[in-house]
Length: 66
Image (cartoon, rainbow, N blue to C red; front, side, top):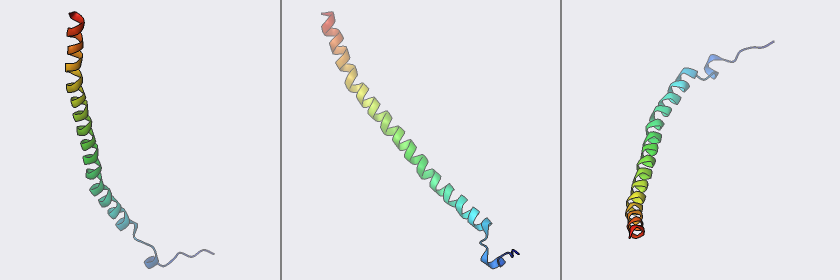
């Protein structure tokens, strides 16, 4: 026959669930900051590339027109 373990031997799943939720909530903003930081860096690099490429392209067009 099967017998259940003592109640004291069984961990309280509600406490474990609350701790897991708390950890998830504190970890989430750090991940969001990482995503935002990556997006800002990407936007800056694209802007820098455009700022460098635009004058070069305009210079080539002017030379071709002459």
